[in-house]
Image (cartoon, rainbow, N blue to C red; front, side, top):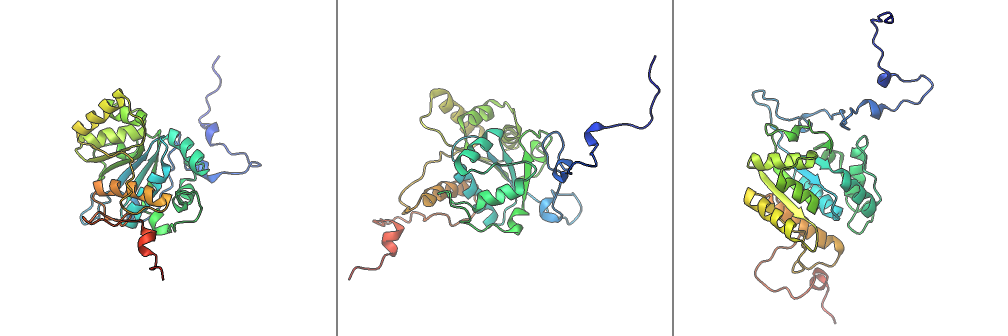
Length: 282
């Protein structure tokens, strides 16, 4: 015999015990890990299609599991300093790298606070090195790596392009083969098919044959392959200078203005920035 029908639906996943502490952040997330809380204001909305509406066209920044999270932080700071909007995708593997390199645990439900702490940290690990404003963070939208229904997963979602910093060899292979196993790879595939700018800052050494072939495939598909390879002619005196050089080259490839490094002007400098700025000896 079937039990009597009860017209009142009972969803245990939404039931909250009265004597248990309530975590509001969990209410804002669905099973994809998406944080549905949105900042109000034009900067956090895509193009609405309304006449006269300003169009939000962000850069998608994808962070894979390769070592080199300071490169990503410098690129993000550069984009925000230039007034750009950013859609951020942090892969699951990159969270382990970020934790190992900075001690920061990046969490979906608290991504804004974690991102602020990360961007404020210097390449040498010193906290509070860089100022991070609320206005800058308001121009960032975060998408969980498992959210394949996210806005940038569709070609109709308006973006300027995508910067993968750093790019692991596994990420390079996934994008070259069109696997789309997570949101980062899916967005990269969409970027290529829509003929938008894709910059892949690969960070690995040495490179084996299959990876070199994958990089050639990406180049032939229209991507810009940019090894995370710092130069020394810009007068580096600190690890941050080397990181900023690579980040600056990524922004150059995206045609985003910045002042992260000293450009070559056709003249030998003969020393570091510190030597140039030092007063003459008596």
